[in-house]
Image (cartoon, rainbow, N blue to C red; front, side, top):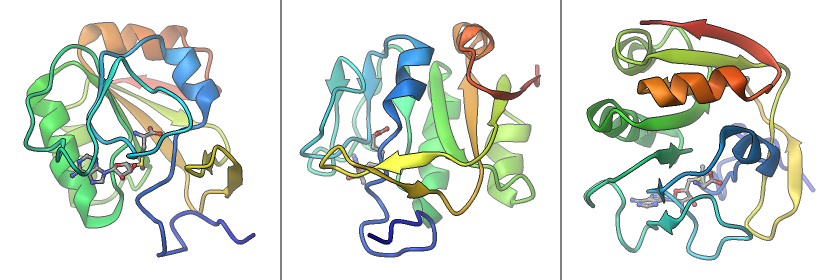
Length: 159
Ligand SMILES: C[S@@+](CC[C@H](N)C(=O)[O-])C[C@H]1O[C@@H](n2cnc3c(N)ncnc32)[C@H](O)[C@@H]1O
């Protein structure tokens, strides 16, 4: 099966977070961008495409592995506004989006060592992603969660 995430267009929105990442970060109140049929819970409450998680009210501690491509920016903007979130995005550190919503606004980042293997909606693990990933913390508690997560990588506190 060819599952090189980021290189492949079909199903590109449905790259599910490896469970070990979520387990290492503690419990989340809300996942505002979740599949309609999900193999596991990522938070206490999930919003899907049918709800449009971008327009709904966000609450509590948010887990945000957003739709990728040109959609990502809107989700990061909402994380910045919400101030209590961890986002998982590709580490495209030179982009305008990265500067505007991460370098200039996030509280900390953890560049994950190696390449993640995202999962499919059926719960099966895919091949390595086509790019490196970074976890982005908004809010002090989420900075602490990154620090104590023991996820391999490089942690940088930004503010
Ligand atoms: C990269 S996947 C991440 C899924 C899950 N959050 C996780 O961490 O495993 C992004 C998810 O966002 C969903 N999605 C796309 N547009 C959405 C919208 N407007 N509102 C809510 N969810 C949406 C997709 O169906 C997909 O399941």
